Image (cartoon, rainbow, N blue to C red; front, side, top):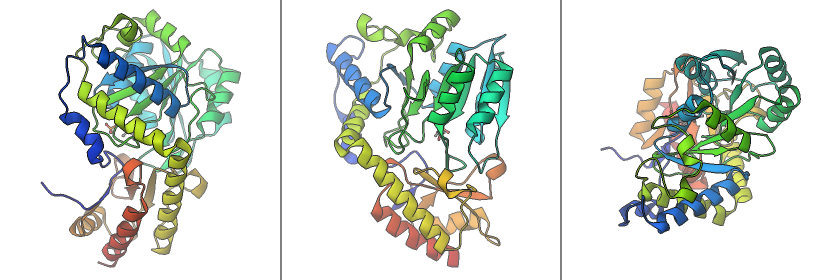
Length: 362
Ligand SMILES: *Cc1c(COP(=O)(O)O)cnc(C)c1O
C-alpha cells in the first residue's frame, strides 16, 4: 500500500504511534470488568471537558455515522418534523435521513459558500414547528464553520421545545464549541477528525430533555442511544464494547487536554490562517465567500481554471501529498486541505505548500 509523507486529507487523520499503541494492548472482557467501566467513565469526563458540556456521554462502537443515524432514529419517526439547517452536503443529509425513517423534513437552505443566518433559521423553526432541528458545525466539504452558539440561542427563543442536534464531527478539538451555551441536546462527534484516532467510535453528548425524547420514542436497534443511558451504573452495555478503541480515545483525549484546549484551538487557527495566506499567494481562491466563515480545521479551495482535479491530485500524489477531493455539486470544482488534529502542524504546512506550489506549476 502506498504511503504518503504529506497527509492532508480532512479525515481520517494521521494517528500518532502512542495512540495507535493502545490497540496492541491485551485487555479483558469489556462486558464484565470494572476497569473498562472506569476507562469509559474517565473518557466520558474528558469528552465533556472537550465538548464544554455537563451532559451524559454516549460512546458507541462504529464510525461517526453510527451516531448520526442513531440520533435520528432514536428521536423521530412518522408524524414528526425535522428541520435541517443546511449550508452544505452534511446539513442536507439530515433531511434525507429523517425521510428515510418516515418523518417529515424541511430544509432551510443557505448557499454552500456561506454559513447559516441565525434569524432565518429562527423564522423557519417558528413557521415549521419541528421536533428536531439539525445543523453542522464544520461543513467539511465547504470548509466553513457555522455560528452554532448564535443559532442555538435564537432557536431557544423562538422554538423552546425543539430539540437541537449538531454534527460537530469535524470541528471539536480544533475549533471552540460550547455545547451547553449553544443549548445542544445531541452533540455528535467522531474519532477520526480532530481527535486523530481510528474511525471506529461515534460519540454523542445527550441532554436531559434529549434522553426524555429518546425514552418516549423507544427505538431499539444496534445504533439506538437508549441502552447507553444507564449502561455505566448497570454495568451493562448493548454489546461487547471495544476496549481497544475506547483505550485509544482515552489516550487521544488525554493528549488533547495536556496540550490544552485553548492551545489546540490556537494551533488550528494559526495553521489555517497560514494555509489561506499561502493559497492566496499561489493564486488559489478560497471557496467560502467570506474568509471569516472558513473553518480552522479544513481549507476549501477552488480548482484553478485550466487544471482539473484528477491532474492536480495525481501531481500532488507524485510528490507524496494527499488532500481531499469533493462530493456532489462540489466534485471536480473544490478541493480541500485537511489540517485537523495531528495534521495541524507547521511542518506539514511547510512541506505541503511547497508540494502544492510545484504541483500547480506542472
Ligand atoms: C467526517 C464527517 C462525518 C462522518 O462521515 P464520514 O463521511 O463517514 O467520515 C460526519 N459529519 C461531518 C461534518 C464530517 O466531516
